[in-house]
Length: 270
Length: 265
Image 1: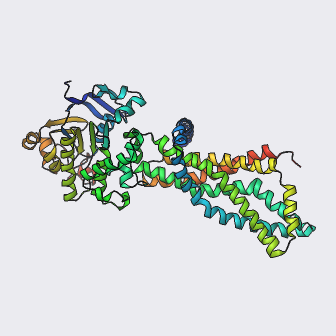
Image 2: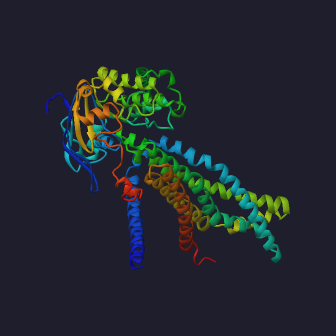
Image 3: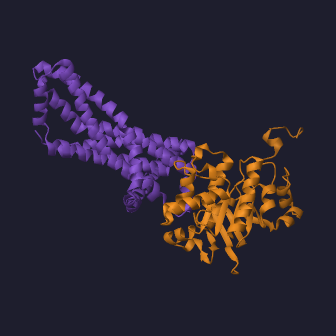
């Protein structure tokens, strides 16, 4: 692992009971880059994020962040590490009983002894970065989906993390909000020098902003490369995914018995 | 037929094993919560905020119910006692019934339905909307930050709510029997003062409310934290909080009463 690598994933396997979710995953994520992890629904993308964040332990293999193996850390050590990382949940996961301001200030109040006046300035700066300084008094219920995602983004950069993980950040957004969130991810990553891992199935938006893409299919890395390589790829799975084709390596039909036998047709008609 | 019997027995076995697992999880959760309560007690403003939501906002239902229960007790007590010419003892009847039994039990039942269900629904929804997971990822322990303050707020609020219930209930009894029916005011209060013993009646009543407060709030926070993160899961957990709490309150009340008041004349 070079000193420029922040996250290293080596031969990672994960199963729920007998059902294997991830099989032999290897990835390297350099500092200061935006990495996308793509794949169809239920392919194990979110599980991979949970493994990186230490929410679950792998069956074998490891995830190393800044040289530390995540699943070998004690709970206190894991919490120490989590102060340097952050996660943006699919629908923001804002604390509904706190205002926008208090949501962004939450970690500062929990983990630091900064005076309230300084916290106020920092929170307004973070909210300004996502364009919502004027909304700091609102409650989460008063925000649109896109605004909630931006507040969550401001909250996730509250303590200037080394690593941010985004779980489906583009889901359910209108085209303007989608573009705003995409650009913010890129801009904040560059400005703060952090590493971003974006789990998504929104191909077009993410290819505009990421540095490297991993495709996961059926628990293994099906392909990987830069956005240009991915767009030009002729690998059947990547081609089907990038161009949204209905049928291909990922079949349209769920596995079933023959159509004729399901419809109980006699052999002469079948 | 044998297969159906085997399936039936297996089903019973699964349910028993699930219940034992759940009981184990609940005990572990309760111990963890107690261990992590130092944060809540150090940052007492978190508990005070929750006392407002669980205690203060439950006051209306407690006061109104207490008033009506006291009024009904007064009416019924007067109706029976006057047959024996002892209507002046109605104050004693109202006070003892409320302080020993109805105050703690009815207040706890109302607390379980009003505040217990709200605690379960809130924690369950925080789980379903990934707020608890987000907190974990921010290196903040949800048991210390969300669960423990709600637990202690419930434990602290319960005795005050029950005391309020009994006080307003006695006032309701006074209104009906003294003001409306015309029982002698002096004997109403003096007989009550003579009959109600501080140690046996009031302290035992307070002990009951403390036990009920711990039981109801522990059930409420556990059900919320353990709820499946779906709409159906949260609604099921809320119902379980009310049903389990009510049964536990009534069961514990019998046990506590048996220990506290046996052999008393």
